[in-house]
Length: 302
Image (cartoon, rainbow, N blue to C red):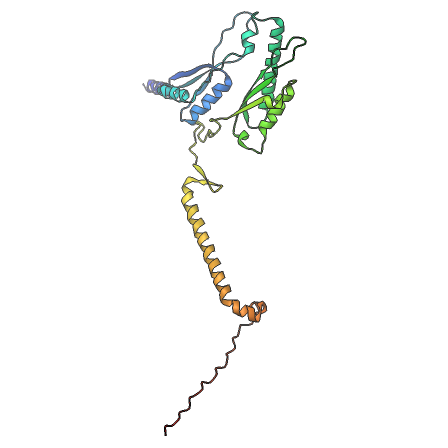
């Protein structure tokens, strides 16, 4: 009897520990899966990244691994609403290389040009990603069609660069925009520096706090504000202002007192000099003799 009771208790605990998981996102790459897991955890929702089972046919190769994101069934709708609000997962369209890599819609020369252009764009994007603070980068080149022999080339190549960063490009001292434009313009012949456009975008997901609780990546840190180029916690602003104005009043009162003492002792300093004031001997004041008053003689009236 006791053995059966222990068995049922153990089975009940096991079933209670099993939480039903539901998929909120399916078939995303590992980079987006990690981003979604961290963002949901920062909002108080524990998410799990699960490798999607794939079935490959004979002769086919699996190039990338896809993942599903699972959360507790009771919080599935909340997680989907949060992800929809910030546009996760992101939709990634096909590139020019994907459209024409295995088709015969274009001539071989044109295909080789497209492949060279796409490979150069990927190499430039990978180089820019090596810069500290850059999260992701996309480079697009616009190469005009070569003019016929004897005709003047009117169009010039241009380029557009999109950079997602952690805030490093907001620093004017980094000069990253200038460096990126010089890098891209030097990678292709006849590409002028002024024909390179750089568009920067600060990521909204870089301020996610690291885990305080291992089971939940969530941290409600103090709210910081900047007052007169000084960063402090928000609840300390009132104390800082009170101390600032108090010491400002003390400095003003000391300045007025100093001015009054200088004005008061200026006649003595002008007559006896600064040496008398700095001397350790006490300052003595000589009493000036008082002139006797003249008494008016009284004249008798005869």
